[in-house]
Length: 520
Image (tube, rainbow, N blue to C red; front, side, top):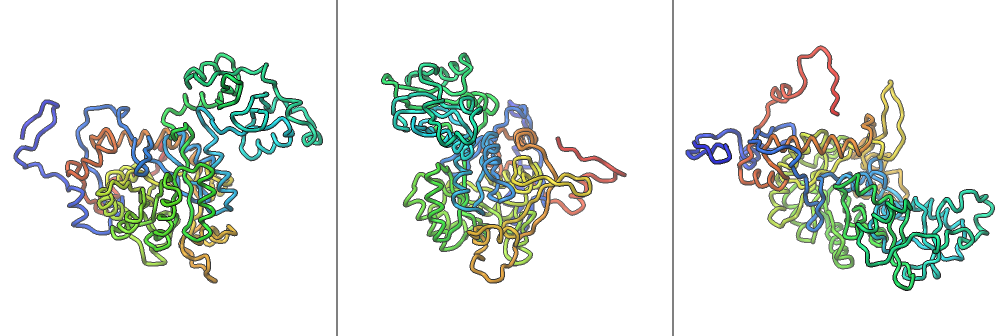
């Protein structure tokens, strides 16, 4: 035994055999959950602020935090997806709704924050004020350029905002043309199309305007920049964006024939990644859908699943999957393992699938069984690149649904997509198709409906508590990044240990008369 130059101890003679390697732990024990083992501490020679949580979502998409919100109708719609992307993760819009509704939710995310907006919504001078209100209702913003023919690369005539029309009576909306009330070109602040994004933001700051039209030498509109984007870029430096500086957004679809129409509409809306939503992903239906997506929309990344075995993973990777979603029956509202007697303990599932998938550079997303920071860190240690969360996010302000009080506690509804309530909620039977039950006369529930406690805003919960908590945990382990964590796990330098039932009790709050558990 000796000391190296960094004050770390070298185990030259091999006498320090403390703990188990990841491989040893799972060779000796089957069916482990996250609570069944603990990670042994490493050596700290850096501050937690220097820990990077950047990780791969799919083969070609990297995000700055390993957080994904699950495609459930009580978890992820546009408000949640926007919050997730702003904080460095990504939201997956659920499909327990009509095609039009899901598409509109994706569009809301993609149009929320942009740099140079090269395909802005544009009006012609013959459009009416009613069209402005329709755009506001559909897309959530105003401040719309007006060009000669109502298209990009046409001569800019003016800009219409709510300030131009807010005093008009509703009876006038359909009769007054935008050309009559818009702010004309000569009163606008514009910029030429050879400036940088930084220069454009400087102009917005000086002019105190909300929108900056970018024009060419012939006064044709070529793009648009919004002032709110400057503020969002400043407040959310980790935001997940595509090459056009739009927020990243995912959407779920099923594997039925009718989902092909949903797929095409989502691609047109600008979705970045498609999640094939099935409780058991190793099916001919999912394999055929993966091949179809790769043939018709090769630029779209596909997250396949769910899987819990290496055999399942092999089928979907061979079909062309860009990432795998791992988990079957481990979610807090899921009863698949109980009812169907099929599934796998989540820690073992993540380890086994990640071990196989890493040979092909396919990222793994741990889906289910996550109830605290420690579970996230354990999933990442076992080889997951990201974690997909449901119950952790369901009680936040950004989750769909209204709060209600029960016994003085502020709650929000949370239900599994395999619950009877969810399967009967949508005319398209999208939730039922996830369990191959859409044609059944009697539906067998694989989930329950319940409620979760208010957790406040996702921005504070994800961007503050979870992010900082994982940084602190990786510091304790001695890793400055998720990639370093993976390397340490597979090389055997990071050691684990199985926990007895008594050890699990000891590791929690115990022997107190009363206590208050405030996490942040």
